[in-house]
Structure formats: C-alpha cells, structure tokens
Image (cartoon, rainbow, N blue to C red; front, side):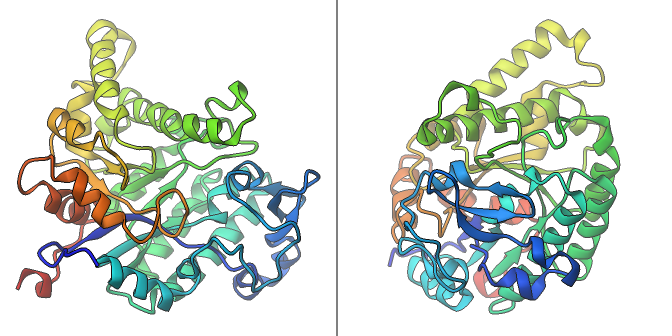
Length: 377
C-alpha cells in the first residue's frame, strides 16, 4: 500500500459496472422487456442489446471478451468485482489508500444513443436507484453522480432534482457529444443550466466511445484504439469551447464543470488557442466578456490520469487550483493496484503541496464538500 496517510484522497472519477440482472430488479415493469442484456453482435463482439438496438460495440472491441454470451452473474475475467460489489470495492480502496470515490456508469455511458426517450429516462432512473443502493455500503466514501436523459431537458431536470434531494447525489453527468444533434451550448439547455446552478452541484463531462452519437474522429479510422485516442480529448475540447465561447459560463457564473478521462495535456494548448480566437474574433463571440482562460480558472476543472506524465507541465502553465485526480477504477485503462503510486511519482516533479491539492482539496471544492473532521485531526 502506498502511504497517503497525510492526504485525504478523492477519486474524482471512478466507475461502476452495472450487473446484467440489476435492470430487471430496478427497472419499471413496463420497460423490462427492453432492458440491457449482454449479447454478441453480428461480428461476434460482446455488447448490449437495449430495446431495438445495440450499444457498446466499439468500446467492447478494446477489451478481450468471451466468445460466448456471459450469464446474468458472469463477467469477463479481467473485470474487477469492485465494479458491481461495493464491499469488494472497499477492500481495493483501502488497499490503495483512496478515501472517497465519485461514481460513474459503464453501460450507462452509452444510453444517450437510444432513440426511445421514455426508455432512456426509465433506464436512468433505474441506474440511479441501483447506484444509490450500491453507495449505501459506505455512504461517507461512495458518492453517486446522476445519469440523465439529456435528450429531454424537462425529464433531466426532474431526475436531477430527485437524485440530489432524495438520493444525495453530488453532480450531474453529461456526455460532451451532441444529444439529438444539438451541442452543449445550444439554447435548449438553458433551463437545465439554471437548475444545476440553483442546486450548487457540478456538471461532470465524460466521453465514451459511441456507436451512433456524433463523435469526433470516428470517420478517420475503424480501429478502436485510434478511435479511443481521438474521441476522448477531441469531444472534451469541443465541449469546453462550446461552453466557454458559447457564453454558457458567462450567463451562469455559479456553474462548475469538470472534464474527465481525457488526459490533461490538451488544456494549455486549448486555452491559449481559445484566448487567441477571442482576441481576434470577439465580435463573433457574443456575450463572452472575458478571456476563455479566465472563465476556465473561475469555473472549470480537469482530471489527470494515473499515467499523465505531462501533468506537472500543465500545472505549471495553468495553475494548481483546477486539476483533480481520477483512477478510472475498475476499468482496465490503468493498472490497479498502483494508481496512487504512479500518480505520486508524477506529482513529485510538481511543487510541494501540489499532491494534496490534486488528490484532495480541489475535488472537494469541485463537488462542494468539506474535508471530514477526522481527516483534519
């Protein structure tokens, strides 16, 4: 175990893996025939059938999957049981030295591809209810972030209010891709931003590997590794530009955004480029009153991954107040255990005090939480 006794470690982006049988328990009865179920597609790739369509085909090609459809209680051997078993997760968090984890979906990442909005909303409700129960194993250490059917703004507002007020969730999760063909800065989302701002929670932006949603770079390669390489930072950069240069942060100064699981190296370049465009073409950017880098410093965060070797350089260029840390556990992008050690090895090249900010206090500020009294003692 890596010694993090002097740091209250916050994982700003961990994941759960939804058990296949949980949908039948948590999904409203009239939708159960359309619940996600593991299948093999026409190429023999593990994915999920949901309603009349398939999801997760591109993402599944990144991992080795069984050649047969797993049973309801079976998962591919490389997946860590902490994804669906909260008690197993606690053992892993204790062994690694992680005190608090904010939780995001796996199958749920791909639900925005569904054309049936009623089914999409019902699946979000089922997932959120299951996640709440999962978190009850250690409610002071596991925190849910609401999965929302953003194709329907009114339903999203109702579900977000329910999740924050009844389930105790601490954020609103969205994909950076266009929902229904409309980008995140589109005026239709204004009532949603009003709601989030009034609740005082962050908007967490997390890309996946969509099969049908508009996805930057997908037309350039059929190789899943190359698609993954491109889509995560490219979609986050597009969303960041849309939110800032589209005036969302100016209109909603109380909003907080975090861009997750896309690496952090793109940020200095993107802020510099956005500042340049604001300086040269501000007459095209109506309602944007400040340099984009100033909005980012005021309202935004980015996560570093356990292997982000460029993080010290980003911290030097952007400052140490807007970076958080994320394990991506239990996904296989980063070897576990060992994520804390690799992160501390990287942050050893940063100024003293930086690890505590990146691994702890920045994330607490992002999610509007206080450092627990026992951690202050």
